[in-house]
Amino acid sequence: MVHAIKWVEDDDGAAVRIIDQTVLPTEESYLELRTVDQLVDAIARLAVRGAPALGAAGGYGVALAERQADACGWDDARLEAEIERVALARPTAVNLAWGARRVDAVRREGGGGALAEAHRLAGEDEAANRELSRLGADWLLERTGKKILRAITHCNTGALATTAWGTAYGVLKELHTRGALEMVYVDETRPLLQGTRLTSWELAQDGIPHVVEVDGAAASTILRGLVDFAVIGADRIAANGDTANKIGSVSVALAAHRAGIPFLVAAPLSTVDVTLASGDLIEIEERDQDEVLAVGGTRLSAPGVRGFNPAFDVTPHDLITGIVTEHGVVEPGVTQPAFA
Ligand code: MRU
Image 1: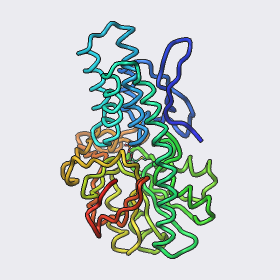
Image 2: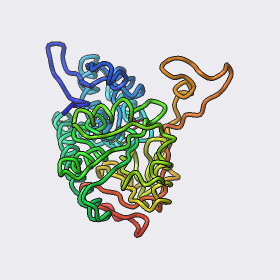
Image 3: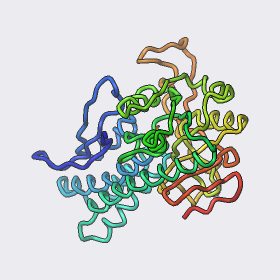
Image 4: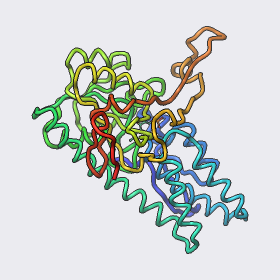
């Protein structure tokens, strides 16, 4: 299994080592991020991405900032400002700031425990993903009453998006391991093509049968009865179950609702933000319009045309059949979720 993010120490010092997701699957290359600037840039460019992987980036970012503070003689105010830059490098996935703040709280206690806490956070993420995958697979088999399932998924939620194993992807992998997964329809996930480039790469490595479809095909695939359920990950889940995830997710949810098939959100508890009562309060990242207007670096729209590029959308809780975390499944359309 590929590791999206790791802490390494070598002759050149400490670094956050990531697989560069901007060039996958054409190139499998790794970046060693040795400064806060490099880490913030990698997060902003989506070289490291996916909510749980961003949680680890936030945590390791604190350890990295601490090392850089020692090397460069930063005072406390500068160190805190640099940690804040990491925490706020992208706004929607709550895991990023959560990871940075959790590890920073340990750093502030003194005693040099920041790196160990970042490792702990990463280890807990893998364990949570494996558990929620098992619970999600159980729930889907029971809910559908079928022994073999066909799925649709959106964006990338595998090992690349997490510290290991995956969330929605982990559920698919669990079903596959049980011999209960026939086929996965993978939305390409415009504009940065996480589905085409990343999810299909992971599915191919795991030997899971799949096809890649344009995002515009998703609703039709669902309404034609080609899939038995939809499963996505999450970037932030509000207290009422409203879920922010990659742009296009809500279209999948609407179609699944109309077709009467389960729409499952799979995420570790670290993605739940109980400080926000509803999804209206979730900040949606808006990215550069060129990501929409150009394809493969070539601008296709006429000069002067403006793009609109929200990176995420919010699926209202009443369109979500289940949210699975490592603590179990809640059904936000039925009862107000009580996240453990
Ligand atoms: O912009 P990205 O690629 O970071 O968006 C990622 C997603 O929307 C994922 O579905 C989400 O973070 C869950 S990853 C397990």
